[in-house]
Image (cartoon, rainbow, N blue to C red; front, side, top):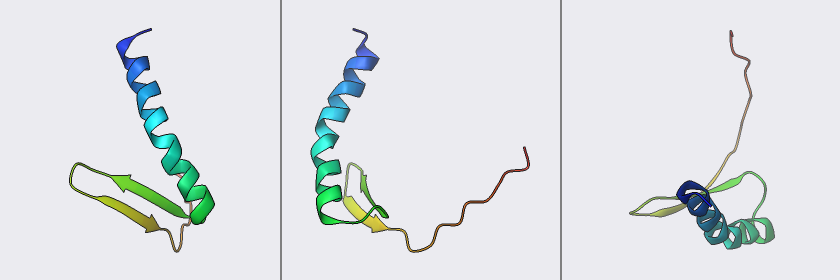
Length: 54
């Protein structure tokens, strides 16, 4: 298995409990943002998709 695929699988394994936590405790409009200095839980209030000119 390539190193990149191993890294992807490792990240997925680490994040699955966070996804489960979100599903069980919040709504589909919530997102967790993880950086090296903080963990944020944010919620979208309004989202309006717009088309591109392509």
